[in-house]
Image (tube, rainbow, N blue to C red; front, top):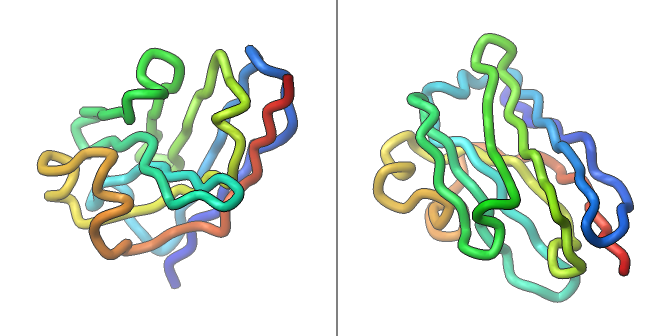
Length: 129
């Protein structure tokens, strides 16, 4: 059974940092394009970042330079380091997997455009002023 389980969300003030983790089971993360997407209150799903098996990464423009995606394939864990958080970063954050080839074709955009192979239940990030 495939399962992605996120952790690390919480409440922080603007300018603060959080590190999200996603533990994968029943799925080999290096066989997929892995990434994070988020959904704010009343908002559409928004891709945030992607990473492929070669650790090539891509980021949505608003998080470029502030967020960093990484993975530990041996531990089947995905991470998202989030720095300089703003109120606009508030939302539920989900880790997800899509077919491997979509990292090169779409990068972070894949997580709102193609069917997901797997997704977690999400972890809530709340940024206050």
